[in-house]
Image 1 (cartoon, rainbow, N blue to C red):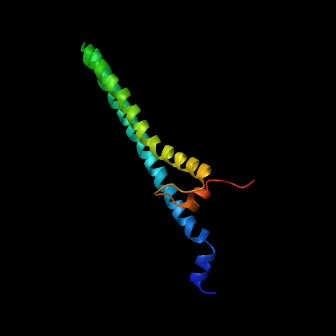
Image 2 (cartoon, rainbow, N blue to C red; image 1 turned 60 degrees about the horizontal axis):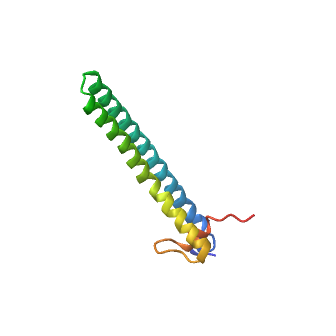
Image 3 (cartoon, rainbow, N blue to C red; image 1 turned 180 degrees about the vertical axis):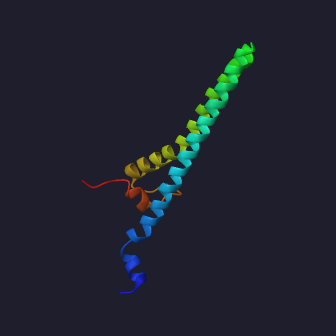
Length: 114
């Protein structure tokens, strides 16, 4: 049995490195998103508080409101990929067919046998 036959018979040898890489990339994205969110909150809060402290109340309130809006936008952007995957898994569970752009085996692996 050659190495190609082993790879054809044992997909975990191919899938494990791919999945490990995907999780590492997701962890890096999540870390950077957290750091970006912290920077937005820190800079926005400091700018808003400083504006209020020097008696520029409308500007301070506007900066604080923009900070809250930026955090909400970042959270929506970061939650979109997981929501798309959940919808794809749901559609696969209901229809048995993988939606366009998704691998059938990847969606099947989302279900654990008991």
